Image 1: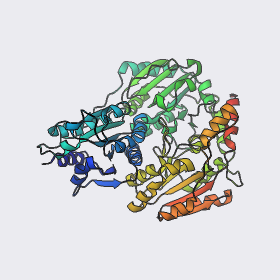
Image 2: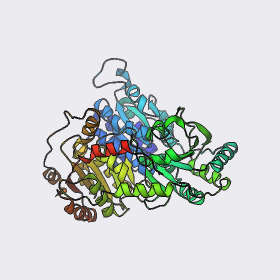
Image 3: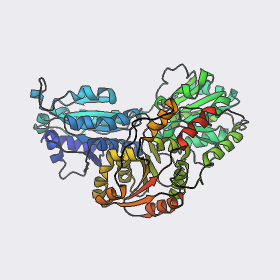
Image 4: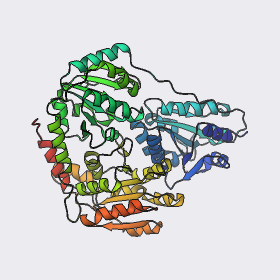
Length: 544
């Protein structure tokens, strides 16, 4: 059989449902081999969007998302989304075409060493040089993509190898090994927790990846230990849970950090350093750490280890639970929780035109009723979502965190709807981020998908302005001219709604979510609150 046919059989063997990408001359054999396959090729309009789709699909399903590009500019266009998957630990398999092996030793049309280019943003990265190695390479790629900690891998298929005749068959898909923490470390951790008067848990992305949400909830409810989550672990406890102290991650003295300031022990569960560096939440390295994660802890002066439970997070929590004594909820937690609730909802009903970001997020929460998957783009709105939006379920709020890449929202919404067609999906984006990949409306419309896009419209790069004002008390070169977003949407056959006053927002959101089509809501936002938030956080002092 042809090598590209064998490659597709290997992808089918791995359970691949979708490949996101763009055909090109050097990957044309692979695309041709997809004819008659159960794998659906999702044609996009920019390879960056293809990588973002694979990234979000991997985040939501735990199965590798797959993206495809040709050589040269097609391959380099994947890099932003691949970097996002690499730092946010989303399983992704990127496949790129390449020039024939006979010409890669010299200067040649569109040839660049892509193995070298992808090296720093992938867990594993391999060119296929011999056709009969395809089953081994594909199996290894998918295995490495999901092994803790998950991430992106890259396979390069030169055009002459793809055309070769070869023999072979896919290798069996076997379960990945899972490690468990040692008994001695479990005992050491339990003793430290039992000694502690005011322990607190920092829950990270690994809690969701390892399927440990229920185990975490059972543990904290039995032991009366409060929980703070990172941006990427939103929803590990529902927003009304008495033990949640909500979200941490802004690089400032946020209210929730008062819990860390008062604690005498911090238990990190599934925490990735890329989510929020310890120096921001363990100032002076004053609190000892119990580390529960699939891999050993990173070495960091602000992360002094008391015990290290290396292995599956769910198994670690379950093994620890019988040895840890139940506690009275330590003084100050209820007061801090009351303060947090007051601060987080103080501006929910702010009225006017343009609309305050707090009001947009409050109405978004009312409209989606705890059921929607929210895909947040990067910009000023991301920090408001990270701080104020508290979902009811895990893995229902996707935020580009480690790479913090603009342009992810619309491609991410497409991937989310393909992964979970029965769920409402809402892409929340700024106008700057939307314009980076807004053309993928054509892809979504062609696929017959239905989701909502909410644009925070201020005709500037609001997050950069926020940073400039904080640093220099002035801004520069951050404004631009937007198109008419309703006409833009209409040109793709998409419904558009304009919202200029807070009174119009909730009805528009409810109508859009109920629609069986793509609906774009263009919201005029008032970002004058940005600098106020920074100053409030910086001046906050714990009084518990």
